[in-house]
Amino acid sequence: MALQPRIIPVLLLHKGGLYKTKQFKKPSYVGDPINAVRIFNEKEVDELLILDINCSKENKEPNYTLIEDIVSEAFMPVGYGGGISSLEIAKKVFQLGVEKVVINSALERNKELLSQIASIYGAQAVVASIDYKKSFLGGTKAYFISGSKKSVHSPIELAQMAAKSGAGELILNSIDRENTYQGYDFELLKQVISSVQIPVVVSGGANTNADFDAAKQAGASGMAAGSMFVYQRPHNAVLISYPSNYFYR
Amino acid sequence: MLAYIGIESRISAVHSQITTSDHLILPGVGHFQHGMEQLEDLGLVDVLKQVVLENEIPILGICLGMQLLTKHSEEGNINGLNFIDALTKKFDFQDATFKVPHMGWNSVEFKKDSPINKGVVSNPRYYFVHSYFVECANQDDILCTTSYGKNFVSGFQNQNIFGLQFHPEKSHRFGMEILANFCKI
Image (cartoon, rainbow over all chains, first blue to last red; front, top):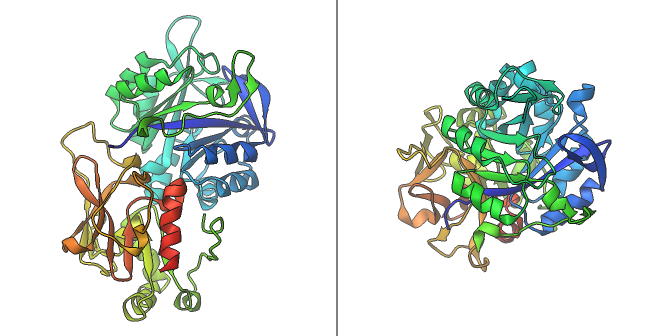
C-alpha cells in the first residue's frame, strides 16, 4: 500500500450547530457537531474539515470553545476554516490541537497571512480554499466571504497566487455543485493540478464512491464531501455515513 | 488520546516536572531550527540529556520531535539533540507525482520487534505529514520503514530512545496501540 488520497468529511458550523448548505445558501440544521465528530471518529475517517460559515461574513473570531471540544474528540487530523484573519487568531486555533487552518477571505484581505503562518507552522498547515462559481455572463470566478463576494480572478489564477503566497494545500470548492450530487468538477480539477505543485483536494458535488476513484485517477490528493456523508437520499434524512478504509482494502 | 486510554499526561516545559515523569513525549510540527531554539531557550537541552541519557527514561519523539533526536538536520543546517546516530534530510524527488510534504495515510514495514510495536494489528496505517526524513547510521536502530518515492526510516529505537515520523495521536486505533505500548515500557 502506498500513500492514498484522503476522503474528507466537511462539517459546516453555523450558530454553534452542524448545518448543511446548498450552493453556499439555505443552511439547514443537521445536528450536534460533537456527536457527528464522535461518529466520524468511530468510522476512522482519514481527516476532518470543519468550516464556520458565519465568521467572515459577520467579522467574528472563531468559536474556540467549540473547536476545542471537537478536536478533543477527533483522533485524526483536523483542518479548521472560518475567521482566520490574523496570525494571532491562527495561533489560538493551532493551540487547540488543529493541524491545518483553511484560508479563504484572507486570500484577498490579507495575503501576507499565508506566509506568516507557514513560516511558523510549516506550509502543510496552511490550506487555501478556492471557492468558485460560473457567472451569468460566462467565465468562472473565485469567490470570498462564504461565496458572497466575487473576485476578479479565475479559480486557476487564485490557486496559483495562493500557492505562491505560501499555501501548502488547496481545496477546490465548486459552489455550483455543493449539495447537488452532480459529481466533482473534474475538468477544473485537472487544470488546477497541472498548474500548481502542491496537493489539491476536490470538493463540491460528490455523489458516489465512484467519484472518489475518478478523483484519485485525476491526481487529487483528497476528496471532500458534505452531503454524501451527512444525508441519506432520496429524502435527505440526516444519517452519518463514511466509506471506512475505502482505499486501504 | 492519552486521556482516552487512561494515561495521565501533562504538557510541560518545567524542569522539575520533566525530571520526575516516567515517560517523555517530544512532539512537534514546524521548523527544525525553531524547535531547537525553543528547547535551548527553555533550558531543556541539558535537562533532556540528563533524564534520557543518564536516567534512561523512555522518550518518544514524534514527527519533528523524532528529527530533533538526530545529530543534524538539513532544515536550517543545524545540530540536533544527538541522542541517536542519525541525520535529518530533505525529500528531493525528480518524479513530480511525489509531492512534498509527504502528507496522508501510509503503511509501515516493521524491521524489528520492539516493546512499542508489540502486538500491533496487521496492516496498520498511520498519518504522516513531513518534508524531511531521517537516515539512520546503524541498521539495528531502524524500527520501521515506509515507501514514498523510496524507502525511508519511519521509526527508530535504540534502547530507551524512540522516534516516529508519523503521528500516532492522529492515527485512530492504529496509533493508540503504539502510544499505549510506549507508556507501558
